[in-house]
View 1 (cartoon, protein in one colour):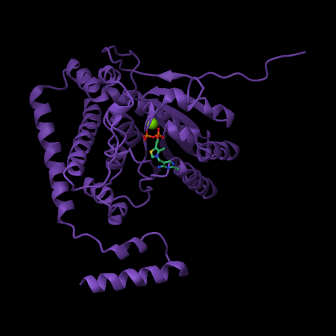
View 2: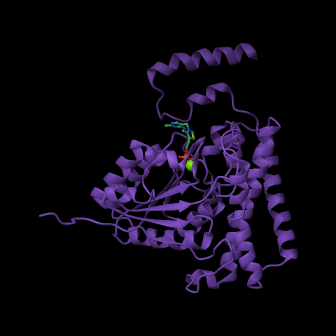
View 3: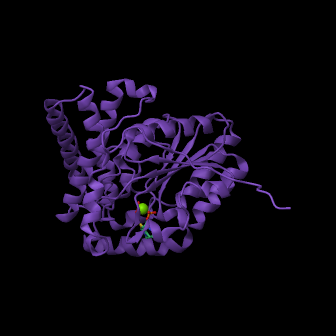
Length: 359
Ligand SMILES: Cc1ncc(C[n+]2csc(CCOP(=O)(O)OP(=O)(O)O)c2C)c(N)n1
Ligand SMILES: [Mg+2]
């Protein structure tokens, strides 16, 4: 006899469609225009920051930078769904969430400028720094969630990574362990359809990336990652569920990387312009703005004022950043170990000597 022993469904949520359609059952926070305007502002600030950071890199004033152009709704959805005590364990494209959590633009400029002081967030002591090794932060998030569970804390770890990262063992292993222990962790897949030049279709034969949760025995769902209302709503539910002992969850947020992978990349070499132009029609900022205008909560003067405010805030951050004296090369030894391992002592001494000779 054969019978079905398991089956699964993956639910997808959206509230505001790219064509302006609006669902009737909006979440409660969406009836407060100030909440929506705050989210709109956070997305515009993020886009302003990204544009400035790319310009700084192009003029030799910043190192390699990863823009989140087109992906702002995911970061802002994460940042607005989390409680202050929760712990964000981000990848390298979550600047919008980091700003909402108290990291300041100047710190991220320092980081991307190669200065470790940028990872020592003055106003946000318990979130994790940017993680460039793909997917390794998932294991860190699971460790954080395990500590929270052992300490009986009502806190949640929120970990984001890309579509490409879901092919990594680190991510599978983390999901698996989170399922076994029913840890308070929410994994957010920031599915921007590309992992540098590798398209989503070459990443996995699975119809959704959310269903990778099923193999780990945890819940998985999709959300329209260009609809900030949907991202916030779905993540709020996932986080509150995890907080009250309901276990981990995987949320796949569907979006599109509208620009190069980083400033070291040229995406026009591997994807057609027509694909990118098409995706601009669904980008998240215009979508929320259209909704706000339609509801009578937004107008040209407010838009112009907001653009000026964001530009001023980012310009001030650039001024601060450029006012920093660069750290000496020996600072590379200062931020990883509490006690420097023996093998590095001689290397540091050698660098000190070179610095001394350089005057
Ligand atoms: C362990 C590891 N392998 C390879 C790389 C080089 N690398 C940097 S970004 C990237 C692609 C990541 O794609 P995805 O997870 O979709 O995130 P996205 O950059 O699209 O946000 C790769 C392979 C790395 N940083 N770490
Ligand atoms: Mg990607």
